[in-house]
Length: 79
Image (tube, rainbow, N blue to C red; front, side, top):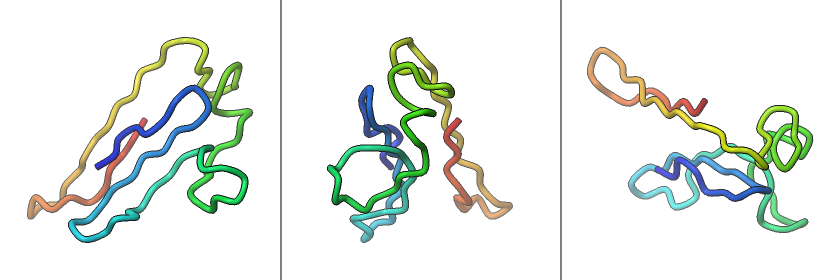
């Protein structure tokens, strides 16, 4: 589980299965202009001076791992 792969200009969160190197992820930035990974945000919502997460100031991240009645992981929620 990669909860935060990032810096002031990019963020990615990725959930990997045992044999799934690429995983399932969400995020913004990184990887260069030709990279086709997750870009679920824009620079207006994440980065220096952004409206949602302004990376010029400290911010907190919370992660939850909800499970079903059989204790199987159902999601990874990053807020």
